[in-house]
Image (cartoon, rainbow, N blue to C red; front, side, top):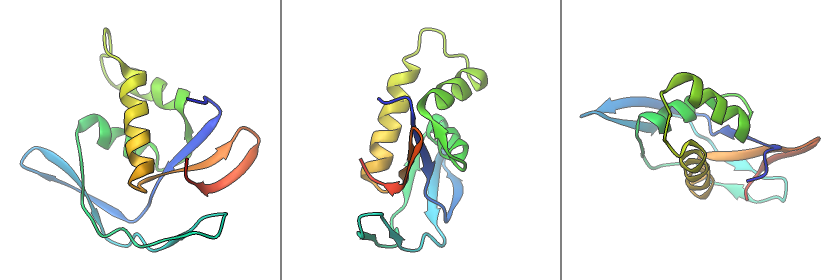
Length: 116
């Protein structure tokens, strides 16, 4: 994964814990227009997250690079012997596919709300 790319989480969700599982419940996700003109509809589903997923989603309330996410996780959790990079990459990939995570910058060039 390109370490220069910055990611941000889609806004407009409330977080709820239901039976030990963290949920993102849409409150006001609105539509999003990508740079290429594509309009993404309002998000109407519920996303289920584990503890790490919730931490990453909350951390991505502001743009972060992959490396910054790795450092944040390592400072928050005991990650010895864990595949932190793989877990974060999987979270980002799924988040982008489900329109919950967006790319906001590639290096010095801004690419607002562009999907992979």
